[in-house]
Length: 121
Image: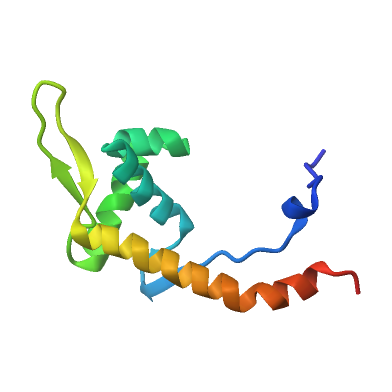
């Protein structure tokens, strides 16, 4: 049995933006959300848990972004008695902000087209 959307909002078409920088280097909603949660929680493992993914998977995604961009989007944060953590670099914060700006511009531009797709024919 498959789940069926019950409300018009759940059935509404929406955009999902992915930016391809080259082979093996892309940025989409999942990686951006991971970065936002790292900023919120101060930890790669806590961000991964919030997304239902393992620390290893979250760390591999962060490493792929750091490598792909050629500079860190996430930096280690040394800690005292509670241990270290992670935080977004200034560049990582800019990546998130620019992605969200692209997403907002695309959604605004596409809104009339998406509305027509939603209307019965």
